[in-house]
View 1 (cartoon, rainbow, N blue to C red):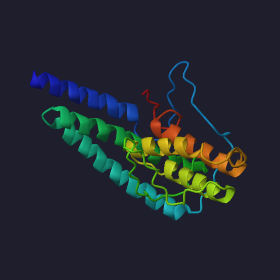
View 2 (cartoon, one colour):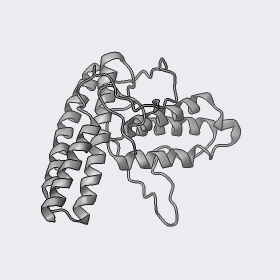
View 3 (cartoon, one colour):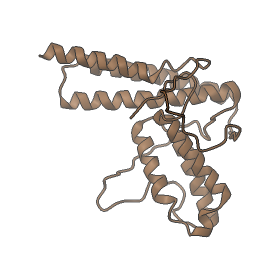
Length: 224
């Protein structure tokens, strides 16, 4: 029975890694499920101009590819362990995180190739958000949680930066909840501000891509 479970885990791992995609093939055509159009919030020509240059982008790509290799080894090590509930949870989380990191790498490759999908920041900002905290807590934003026009623009820009910088599924989930919580708090006149609205839309677009719900060249979309 143990051998059967181990073989099943290995097969599931191969399928999961295959669903993530190979990561480095920038020119490979995306695979789309029949009747499943990619989600998009912004127009294709709505490009974001980052403050960093090509040397910083190349350095980030090198570092992220090395981290992806380390993550692949972790997934393999966990898959080879005796299956039990804690190991299964760790394996599931490791596979999900590897998928997010591969999609993040793919966005960096697209940014390097033709300036598309460039994230606002290349660092990996700390993000720990207890979604099930009781009583509920505010998202751990750097910007002050004020919702006048100027403050909301700053908050929305930070949400954009954090969403596009996610390398783990916990970050993707947490920033998504933060957006849902914060975008309803400004008064209606402030909510309609174009600059803040574009920042939030770009943040959601990044989360779609990192979840595999919007096409990235070289990475197959996954169904959750």
